[in-house]
Length: 459
Image (cartoon, rainbow, N blue to C red; front, side, top):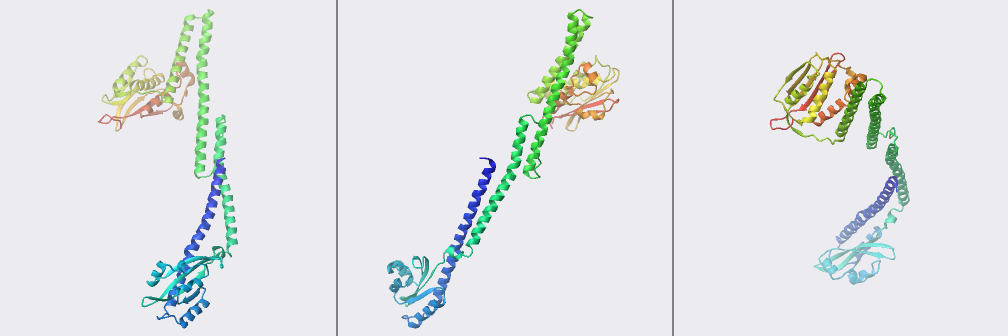
């Protein structure tokens, strides 16, 4: 059974319960309001009649007065001298002992009223009655008996029963029709999402759920569409990624293949050919290593061995590596700074950033390196005065395989993955990577890491 049918059946059952509860409530009101009201009126009438009894044996005037009341009211009333006469007066079968047993007689002698209810075949309904004692010097001189046949509940509402039944049918119809509409309204977005999910599972990443208003279903549809957009974007990135890798590998492979064939056939300078083959093999090795590094970072499988690390020593060691490639470095380093980080990964960050600075700067122009603490942050800043880049390129520079000067970077052996790896490593240390640049005016790269507190924790 579908969810919509289950929902409709639930509404149907609740509708039946609601109508049944309405009839149950009507019966309760009948018992509580009508029956109790009749009892109260009977008691009040009996008390009023007994107030005219002045004591002694019952006289004809008092009996006549009770009979007159019986004729003028909706109650049947009579007064008898001997309670045993009562069995002959009641409108249903009962003997004296049934009506007035020892317990009832004790109540009458204590001037307490007795209430009785029984079924009358003659009237085909319940009879409610009261027996009121007439006492004189603690002797029972007679009783007043009042009774009335109770109206049946169907008789009370006979004039309304058709309207009530019609109303119940109309209510049921409206509830079921409205429930059907509502169940369709509820299940339609879910069905749309199911169909869209099926399309997504089959590779149709442009599938979207139609807008469904501003309620929870609309919000769910919007969230689903955002998920679909993310999947589509991820798929496009995957395709681009694979296409870029294929392109990146095709170039060195073509070089290796071409120069290998030339060397085998004895064409050209074999030493030069082997150097090109070696260079392209190194490029491929670097690309593969960068890819493996990126995959480990993306999957969260790269383990960080964090220790308390004097960052100044790492800055000095990394800078010394590049002194053979570049003539001038100007350092402003706070040697007391300690961070909680993975030495190898932070060395990889510094190496990559300095490699870019050296690659795009003139050999005799200084590269400025600063290490300082500002409040709760440690900042490692590398500023060069090289070629720089257009400001609109900065948001994309950390994307995978993105290059500003593709031809030059490929010639130099860059994979276009370095800054993407740097950004992820820095973020896994709880830090941020900031890049500022302007074409022809150099580039400033800032790595911000959490500073340590006095107790050794990060702020």
